[in-house]
Length: 52
Image 1 (cartoon, rainbow, N blue to C red):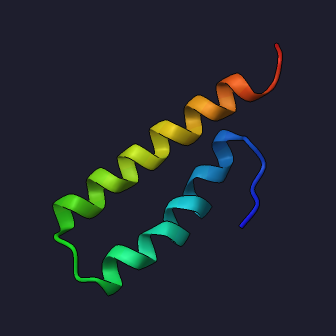
Image 2 (cartoon, rainbow, N blue to C red; image 1 turned 30 degrees about the horizontal axis):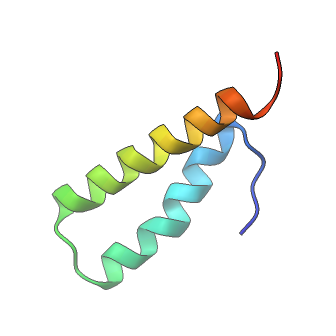
């Protein structure tokens, strides 16, 4: 999966990655923590990927 380094890409990425924990029956708390971590990582990349 290739996405632009933009904040707007977070929902698509969390949806894609979120499929795996659901299939593995991970606890909801772990799924929410994973979503938060993904959002933080992608937002950091989006803020730093392109020069201002």
